[in-house]
Image (cartoon, rainbow, N blue to C red; front, side, top):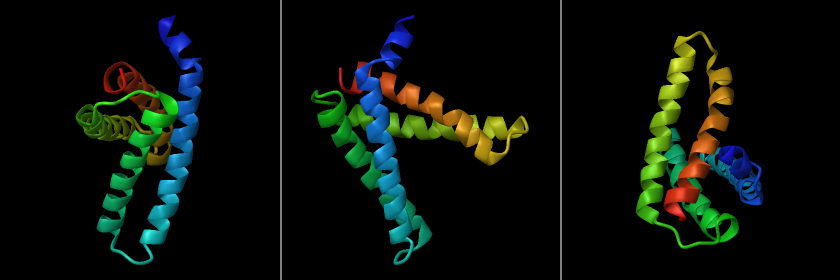
Length: 122
């Protein structure tokens, strides 16, 4: 019940809106970078910029609290690992890669929000 209350909060809605906008912006940036830079460098720079601006958006626009940057960096690394494992597992169970990403994304968003609310921006 407490989880449902948290997910129905204004803070969670702001988290989803900021996350969606930042994802659209970072993917647009990636497409532009790919015109001038190699794939590996483009994706790396996009991830760095996306996570930097996501931290700032969550600090100032979502949680309005001083965060713990090191905890956020650990969350980013852990989220990447969980995403990779979850998608790989779903694909092994017969999901297409696209469907696996679609199924995994809400779980990762909830995990990220809860971790940031109770650890990074506590």
